[in-house]
Length: 422
Ligand code: RNT
Ligand code: ZN
Image 1 (spheres, protein in one colour):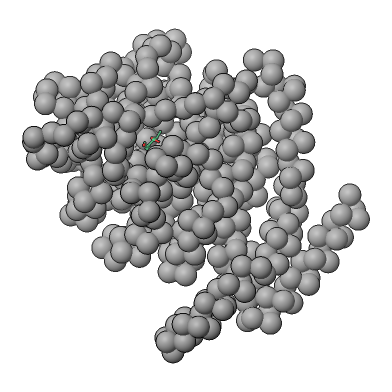
Image 2 (tube, rainbow, N blue to C red):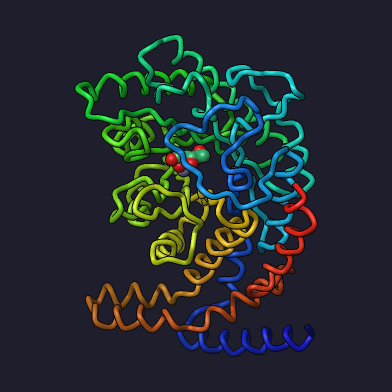
């Protein structure tokens, strides 16, 4: 082991010299990535199940496939699994919780009646683990969402129910932010849309805007809660029309000073959210990302080290947006070990941020401004084989988490001792 550590350090020293020859300060990159806080979505651990035990369908066009054993069945199991995942990921992060993970002591509490007390255990746990929290109202997996409409429903009663849920969730978010000393981002995503071509595209959008206004009417200290709205192009069951489209929400966010949440799976397959960051941030103070991986559709595959992931990280770093872009993850795969899914996706996100921080960006910018596109391409291509792996390994070592694929041994042990006994 000691020998291995020595090797990692030696490789790091060589890599550092190589980067220094390009004018890149590796220590600075390591500092950037040490400060990065990724919002880990709780719902990878239980296939977007939640703990209401209502026995209802997931709905909302969300689909989780796979039957890998060991899914978390209780809040304690989910927290235990998250702790295991977090122990294998470098850095200090956030927990992103959905409202239907409330703990109501066996009492049936409907979504519009949820209050901070139903998240007591989550908040205490986050505090004990040094985590911030983000939050999401849950506008799916509920009888009042079963026809695919919530905040834009044509029934004012159903709309009102969901508006109340949204209001309750912002208060819960504020409680989380207040107690944890870090603003909670409460992100609104609704599934509302039509399977087939509607004749009226306008009315649901008008109703959605009105409902959102009602949800956001209460002023809440941004030191405690900040709001985000998440757009989508289409979903299963809403293939032809989604009320909360990108144009809808970008306009709403700009007008009402909300964050827009860009989910990597929510656009046309050739469109990437990387290109949207610098545009959105011209008009908005902050944005939220749901880093995901769509395979042919919004399939929410585990985040891997793709070109798109690299482009997202590059945009954040190159644009100097580290304080204005909040990075959350959104994927759910039940066909592999769920803890491994978290670890793979989160480590990839952090790794992408590290590698993006290792670019000689000033030089690249100069080359581009001299219109030397040949050199720009040469440099970008050569950067692809720089020894960033050595820097990443060193970062893991110094952060006290396993280097390379050795973290899987840990997950396998946990699987044998805990997951397979469920
Ligand atoms: C759905 C959205 C949304 C959900 C989570 C569970 O398409 O991406 O963010 O995945 O709220
Ligand atoms: Zn999302």
